[in-house]
Image 1 (cartoon, rainbow, N blue to C red):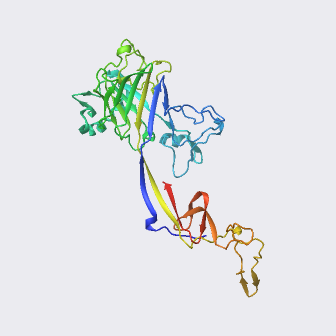
Image 2 (cartoon, one colour; image 1 turned 135 degrees about the vertical axis):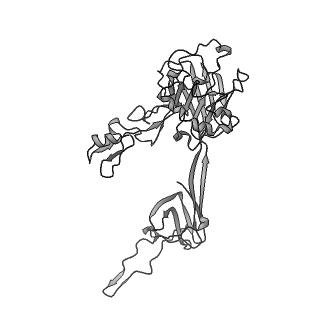
Length: 395
């Protein structure tokens, strides 16, 4: 086996930036991500073991019988290592040294809808989810006055506000600007559509065409943090739905459709069957960055034409070395098998040293094997042929 060292111009380091599509549909308190429903497995009804519309963090326990699920664990010892979900008091009182502290899989994430009414009584502890974004919103205010937490356009601390939270595991490093699209449907008919068409975070009503308040800003999107904040409180039902009384978008009484109710039923505790006419669509592109290494492995002319494979030599030869008390001598006249094809059975074609390259091993500086690249079909290598193999590794 031959070792060859990569030269400086054989290694290329790159970052691949990609924009995967994300499509959420919320209907009747159920969420669907990229039109995927539950997949029936061989042992369980839901092979992914997470609700529809959710992303599994590690994609573990796929199609496993309930009693055979894997789970994380750590033993209590002198390092005092534990899980973040275990409080210090619980760690000290409920576990003895040597006990196993366990967690559970799968861990999943999905979008969450939260509605904050203008009444003071509705501003419970969960309002901290909105209030904690105050500094972030103020930071982006130079992009648009609609980011202001409190100003001439309203006070998000007291007005009706709709907060849609999108986990970073879904969109990656940031939501791509100009790709956010929100659609509000009633009985399958579009009654409102928002887009960030100016790429400045403002969600502008663009549909239906020439609808009431068309061109108005109904909210903003935090691209880096993954939040959609909606404050548009105008009526959306018009035309054939002008008399539509609405539904229980807040989980309480019936209210008419408005942007502040968009996404109702997305992990907000609203009971299934409460909203059977309304549905919501949320589309955007995420941003993912993958570090890659491109490696070029060269097989030059006159190189890599020997093999230690037993089939490389002619069968039936005596390979036993000559040994004695004075020396050890290997045979020097071992014939290599001629595998050059010929159009005739006799005579055979002229001999050429021929090997077949089927895989390339990648080693570190200490010659530890860290990777193997295989070709789909072995490549014929003769002394007068040269090849360059291009390999790419995602980090």
